[in-house]
Image (tube, rainbow, N blue to C red; front, side):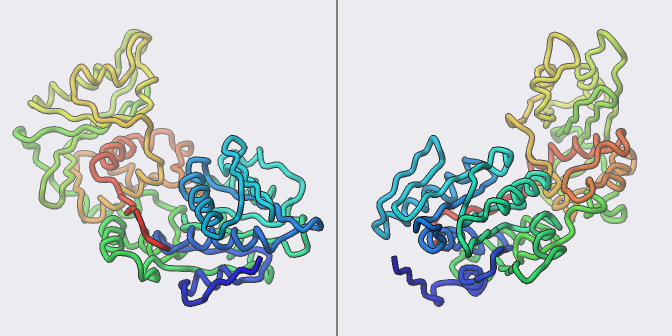
Length: 418
């Protein structure tokens, strides 16, 4: 089949990625820069171009989850095949495309040990850096070891940068002549509504904008987790106002269980932390979460309390009879989702809030200590909770509230051609 793509229909970073002849190609770009659009086109080209001895191709496509693959790849790829009048079958239960030109098998990055198949002629990976280093490493090694289906195999990766993660390891730390990397910016996409870029710029701090708008590798991993915290800017006297509701972030632990008390204002800084509590379990019969609630109410009587707990409290309990969240519901209006947010999303929300929208009273010494001393695990964006087990609890508690009330929102693209 003769395929024709016109250079003028692509942004420069898309065209460079689409037309590269390197065996391993990477596109690292900001949100909305057209990564998935060109990923679909490259896969379509390889369906016909990368063929084995029998004249057919064999493709391997990897996404973090099948749900993401269905949303970003399966439905749009079906539309492409229909547009070019190419007969196909998609076996949903097997996650497999079947065409006369060749087949495509989809796997999850979350479960790289399940990647099987002796020979592929090409492999594409979308949203690579979303996954853990361990899973990225295993998935890449499994894929590269199976690129023997033809003489000119290709492995290609598109992703938004997540610090110095696995894509940086592949293309920068281990750069070689057979690996090609191109960067793209959100602002390169002239079809993006201006409001999309403005939303990005209003939701992310400068460091995150370099990653998620400009598509650059930025150190989001090593060093302080809450890098935006600054004592001079974020620590100031906060007066408790008994006429305003109390918002409470809670992190459940037996030793300690931590609560952070906040009042929310319409004017900046909107988040004002006025006190913290840290209680330890006192042995059999101690309903720690119940005691925490009573302690807060005793010190700060109020007509309205809103609580934002660790979602694992639905299952965990400080007694054999009640879950922690059910105990909280006796005293507060509880706001909690069915699962906790991803750590990276919670941390992003905290760093955004700390960049001008949060102040903390000096009495909150445990919380201030947390924000200054909590660090990430080496080479990841996961919080190090093993080096000092007394750290991270107060900042986690504040993070549950902050993410719920002030999430860092990634703008949605509902109908943009690229």
